[in-house]
Length: 115
Image 1 (cartoon, one colour):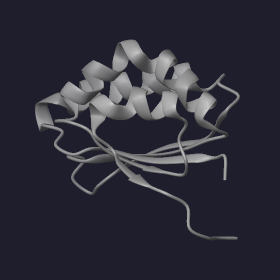
Image 2: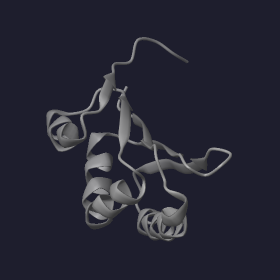
Image 3: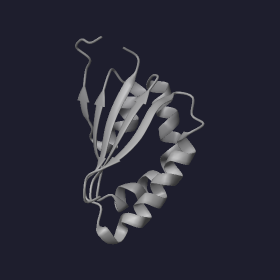
Image 4: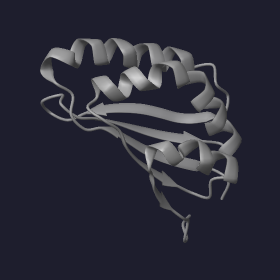
């Protein structure tokens, strides 16, 4: 399985930071649209908009590395506005991708089976 799936959660968006969070998220999405290896990139809020989950699917590790390079400058502000970042990665990331993700301490899930 070459695809990499990610669940990235911004767990604690303060009400007074919500407008800035949404504006920055819109900028991130705009940067991501032309990336060919990004297969899915969907943003979801909980009911009171204090938590945002981004569901991401990349063609492979290289596509995710390219994405990280694209959004690198705005990731820090997103994490700050979102009250942190909790990440789960599904698949078999390359050594380079695992190294790039290490600062975020993601939970890694290896593929077992599926359709």
